[in-house]
Image (tube, rainbow, N blue to C red):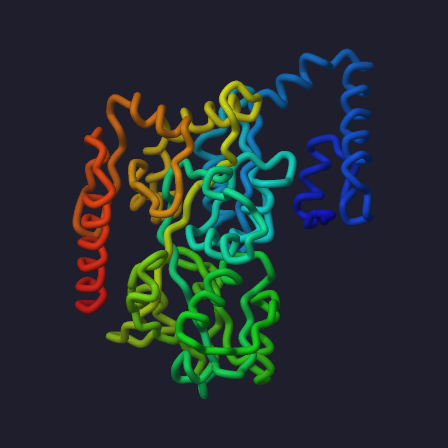
Length: 384
C-alpha cells in the first residue's frame, strides 16, 4: 500500500535532502531513494562528506502530533532538554497523531521514536493488519497520563444521547480516533463518527451539524484552555467500569482544570490513559539502535531538566521505571535503567515514588499491585 506523507513530514524531507512532498505526488520509494542519492552526491562533490556524516550520525526523528496537541509539546520539550549540538539532535515531527505515529514507526524512514497512547495497540490487534506488533514496537518509558474529553452541545446530557448523532473524532489518525470508538463500542453506543479538524468541528457544533467532539490530551489541554465558552456547551461524564480496566483509569475534570468550562464545585468523571515514548525494536548493532541508545542515555541522565517550571507540569508525574501493561520495554532502555546509579523519582498524588532498583515481580504480584492502584484511583475520583 502506498503511503502518502502529511505536509509537516514533507517539510522534514527538505531537511533530510529528499525531494519535497514526493509521496503526495505519487512518487514511489525508488524516486525518494534517488533523491537522497542525489543529495549525498552533491555533498560528496562539494567535499562535505564529513559534515554530512556529522549532521546525520546523531540525529533522531521523534514523531509528536498535531500543532495544538500535547504530544507535539512533549516532543519539542524533549528536544529542548536533550539537544547537544552534533552529539545529539532531536527533530520533533508534527504528525497525524498518536495512532498514525505507530504506522510511521513501522514504515516511515526518519522516524525512530514516537509518542502514542497505550490503547493504540487495541486498534492494530483488532484489524490484524500488523503481525507481532508487541515485538516490533516497544516502549522506552511511560509519559503523561492523558484525559479523554467528550465535549457536547447543550441538548446532549449523557453519552447515550449521542446514539445516532454525529460525533467528530478530530483528524483521522490522532489518538481520539482510537479512544472514541473503543469507548462507544464498549458502552454499546452507536454515533455517526466523522473526522473533522477540531477547530472546524467546534464551529459545526454551533450550527448543530455536529453534536459532540472527542479529544485526548494531558491537562491542561490547549484546545480547551483557549476555547471561548459557548452557552450550554459542556463536558460529558464517563462512568468507569470493568470494561475499561485494560487500558484506562478513572480520573476527574474539575473547575480548577478548566474554570471557564466547568462550574465551581462540579466534577466531570472521565477516563485517563497512559502515553508512552514508543520506539521501533531496532536490533543490536544496527545504525538506528546506535542513535536511539544515545537518545535513551541523554533522556535518563537529563530527565530532571524536564521537571523545571518552563516545561509541561505532567513531566513531574512520569515514573521512568513504571511498567506499561501490554507493552514490552525496549531492550536498550532496560539495560540503561539497570545501570543507573541514582534513578530519578516521580511525584504522584500520594507523594514521591521511588524509582530505585527493585527486584522483579512475578505476573501475579504485578497484577495485584495494579489492581490496588485502580482501587486507589477510584477512591480518589470519588472524593474530589
